[in-house]
Length: 510
Ligand SMILES: Nc1ncnc2c1ncn2[C@@H]1O[C@H](COP(=O)(O)OP(=O)(O)OP(=O)(O)O)[C@@H](O)[C@H]1O
Ligand SMILES: [Mg+2]
Image (tube, rainbow, N blue to C red; front, side, top):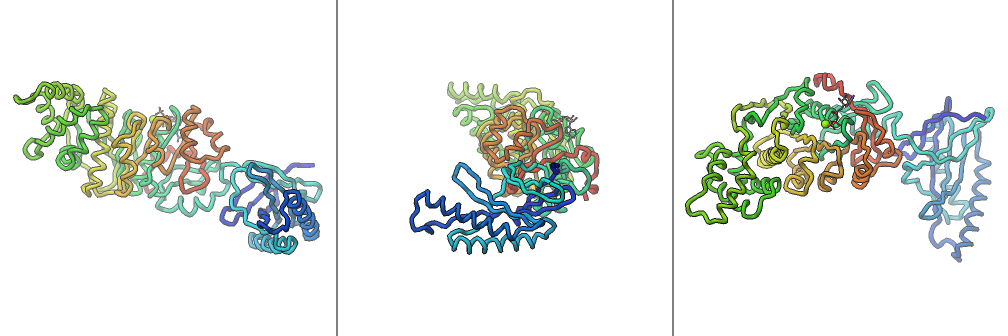
């Protein structure tokens, strides 16, 4: 007896299983047999079982006559936690998909006749991870069907129809290729618009997150999206070599032409106060004082708002009450390091062409200031988009996001609001358990590199469905390998992110 190697593949649309076993190709279709309610005069459980057994005996008898070398049938019952389900499987060798579907139709009629209308057939709606397939054991020239429970490999030997229709279009953002294949035909992209439904990139230290975010950023720019990168460690400037970019160092006083905090404060002072409130834990008295100072701010008259704030926070006024003075000075201490960032030394212009705008945060040494500055940048970009002052498809990449998005606050909430303005977020973090549930819920695409902590794995599986056999691989993925789960796709993809894309100009994506 020789066991054949076989590859099972599911055509989800038709509910057909394709099995490659050596030279032979089989098609299998599962049909579920369901007894209609109230078709037996008396419904004691024993009688139903007897009736079922009698029916199956008749069915097997009829099918054994119908069967041939190239047409086989298996009837089996699964004992599951919700009761028994009986399936009839037809397995055909060398037939076309149409033939098998027709055969399934005929079987429906056979079943109806044999059960006198008491049993109907249903397409098996969900063949999922726990797929029952029938490998073929060769005995001489004959094949014998055997029943096994196997797990379908998470890789696609042939891209599923979903990939070719929605993920591979010319407008897709190139990320790499499907495992285990190599070469052109396995290339993997995500739909351009999935950016605006937000993306999360997870993985333990060194698993490849930043590289993936860089490949994704390049791909976005190539597809006409302007990308802001909040570059916590200052790594992206060196990585993005093949696309137009500017690198800003806020600690050196770099600022973007046409995107200023003064504009935000003039139009939405409360929005600005809310951000500082959340990231610096202001007391109600401190927020009050900040709001009042900003009410006196006039962009044309005072110019640079940091200087203005510095001045007003230090000086106070004659009529000030004692509590006011104390709150003002406490507020000044909280803001001092932020205000100490040199402001407006170098103006950085951006062209109308899509580009990467890398904001190198690593030169801000104090982490609290770095975090507050990051919040302000996110708010600023969202504000400009919301008011139509920045009219481009835009994405914001937030690396080391656990430092930035770890509490419910105005920034976490923004993520659920901004999609209507065509602003997408790419959230990069090692710890899904550190970012807020709002962030988890609102990222439609998850790119998951190796994750080893069981706490993080649990946080992940709470927020999305990952089939067990794929989940089991997550701790063992090598750098650059990732499971990509897109909310609209039932099955995640196993992908190798193509770091060499970083060297290639956009035109090479095809
Ligand atoms: N797609 C890839 N292909 C090949 N090698 C990769 C890929 N991605 C990452 N690597 C390798 O893994 C190393 C770490 O990658 P990267 O800095 O992107 O990981 P990270 O998850 O961001 O790490 P950290 O937790 O330190 O931020 C890289 O220097 C590179 O050698
Ligand atoms: Mg990193």
